[in-house]
Amino acid sequence: MLKFPVINRLFAIAFIALIILDTIWDISWWIYLLTVAIWATFTIIGSFHIRWNYHLPALHLNKESQKNWVAITFDDGPHPDFTPKILKLLEKYNAKASFFCVGQRVGLYGGIAKDIIESGHTIGNHTYTHSNKFGFFGTQKVILELQKTNTTIKEVTGLDPKLFRPAFGVTNPNINRAIKKTELQTIGWSIRSLDTTKRSKKAILERITSNLKKGDIILLHDSSEKTVEVLEQLLLFLQHNKMQSVSVDQLLDIEAYA
Ligand SMILES: [Zn+2]
Image 1 (cartoon, helix red, strand yellow):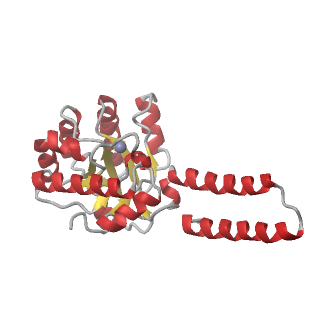
Image 2: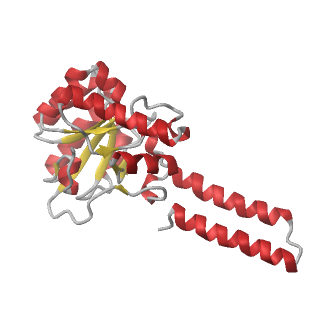
Image 3: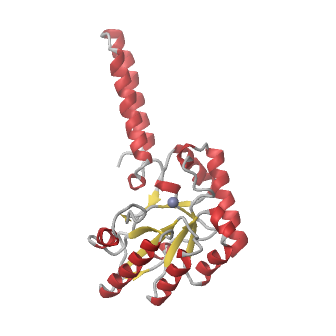
């Protein structure tokens, strides 16, 4: 798969070649512009496709999983109404999950974050503010977001998360530098439920279960009643198909905390 540094080198070579050719033939300015536009297109599309691993290495599934395991993950919590309902359902169906929490929300709902850990689930870092502008933050600002979240989670739970999921799944060179500095492991997903869209519960469940296989990581959000209802159906589906939801660190056989 193409990676950002490879694309940069290829386009640098193409650009130098154009400059050299320009001394022989008169290369039109729009050829230069087109080259830059193609480079920018790759870079921008790569930022929104975490599964390409274009800007940074993220883990999206465990293809080697020997057991019938999947990992259900929830982003954007904790939420005072929905996270407790989700915890109850997970307990009812004897399932484990991972919660990529927003640092600011852990500060507000520390008791729920503690409940997540005490119930045997995993907590990861999902930025401090979940700002709409996260993709435009400089490296230092991203580092601060990540460090503040980890500090807050540690204050509440005593644990220092090693797993990170970027807000909106966006990646770029600044985020790559920040995760290297903070030594976090980025976690993506192999199944995006789209549970935050207007899709019906049936359509969301169908989207998750139609191609579900062992080793998959499922992206959900503990931020709506709809997701709570989809979750119960999903847990019934797993039970029926003799599949088990485990924490993402168990699925990937990695450490969740420093
Ligand atoms: Zn999010």
